[in-house]
Amino acid sequence: MGWIAVSARDSTPDAEIDPRFGRAEWFVLFDPAAQRWSCLSNRDAQAQAQGAGPAVVERLAKAHVVKVVTGSIGPKAARALSAAGIAAIEGAQGRTVRESLGLIPEASGARTS
Image (cartoon, rainbow, N blue to C red):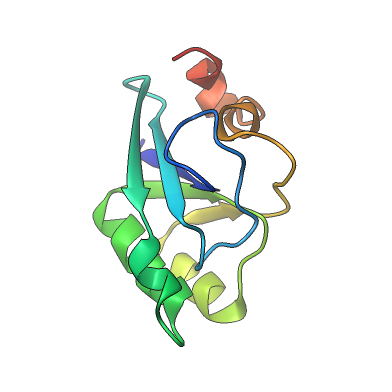
């Protein structure tokens, strides 16, 4: 198993989900096996005119992310995620990172920090 990444408006498990994938400010990462948290800044992607989604996928793949939780993913990013073997759960919004991970069976321990 690897990391689960959630697009977020801040760098903590209690941050609100950012519904944008490629332009999210942060990705909060959770490792279900080790029950630990990390974060990845995505501020560089916000300045890109195009290709933010695929660039983010490349960074997430290097971080050993196996699943992404976010609001919506564009077609280029979706193709990049598929090619990288990273599963995606779309439609997440109105929750915190921690709350969203509580809905994923393999991340059920995410409710405690």
